Amino acid sequence: MKANQWPRRGREASIRDVTEQDLLAVQAINEESVPAMNSLSVRRLRWFLREAEYFRVAESRSQVAGFLICMAPEAPYASPNFRWLNERYRNLLYIDRVAVASGFQRCGIGSALYRDASRKAGDRFRMFAAEVNVRPMNERSLRFHRLLGFEGVGMRDHGYVKVQYLVRPLPLQTAPSGR
Image (cartoon, one colour):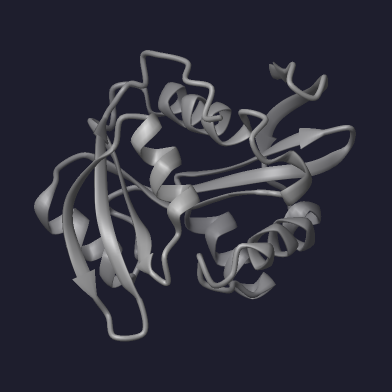
């Protein structure tokens, strides 16, 4: 599906389901974001490919430009952050991670992925839920989520990392630029 054009850089892009062939590119984009996000192996990405409610990529000029992974509440996911949010909120669509390749940042790709996930969520989910690192600080992600209307609902210190929990009602009705 032709989802968006990001006029700032004149790049046309589409959002589509991830494939096995995309996993190395997804991993490379993820690794660009470490330590703001945890590192992921291709093996773990294959698990997400099987278990995620939503795992899609934005593609521009035949290359993966970004991705978004979301989990349904019933997913067999052992993440302590997923469990914390799931225990407190009903019908959430948990955002495990979103990342955009450095050459495509600030072009609206992250916002477009979130709008696409909101459309796919339909009436099944009432809210997005996520966490963002505040130690080490991920200011870019905090700013991005605030622009999309996410609100902080708690903090948790895991020792090696501290996170802020965020929620936002669905659907996303506006089309924020994310810039």
